[in-house]
Length: 316
Image 1: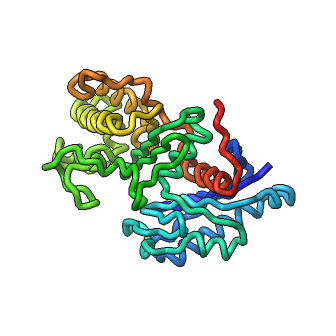
Image 2: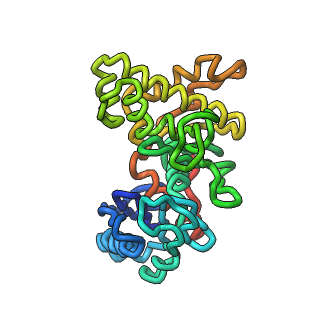
């Protein structure tokens, strides 16, 4: 049995796990990300997390460890293990040689992947997309991330920008997104967007997306309408995406998408001919992701195993 170490570095936390080719986790740990301290501090934290997870292994499992996979935000030059571009959530992260640094520190091959791609790969290999040749995985949280597995392989794009679903433009004259474009899906669907829509609907509202969901669950009609509008925007994005890739499954994950009732709102919108047109969009193609916050770290380990010559499990 071969094992790989997965590392998932986010703006607030670092997850580490050691798993096999079926996604069974044999060791894990969690650390805070020293994002404001800069890239060097984050690299040191990744090494510390890796060593903590590896420290819990038996001698036999340690010998079975063949590679390390890293799930990291930004455009990732996977050939060189370098962050080609990233938002400033981690100070100085753009240009960081994550792969070379970790490989030198840990002494095993290291493979670095975009976090949304890693999450999609985790779901494809071990989660809700297991057995499907092609899937789209969309994570709706503070922002909107996307990953595309096309015919058993990650679709990264020529410049490592493939499947940036959150930055598909819905409304050309819409709200300005953090990316600089106007009308992006992320600007209407993310947790940040839902909170903004609530403030626009009810001036003086000061809560976050969780507060919007809580109010809607208490019967607040205005907040219910905010969530229905956001879900409809996501449905429109899915229909547009399906015209381009037409995959086997569309998986939704993240703190917003997995809130009770939200998936039903999206499916309801997909049944509306004004959203899906005459061709329609079969609601059963849309499923909830299965791996939760560990999708990225498990996906990173699976990518490392595959890159090291150990195939990901494909049967259901």
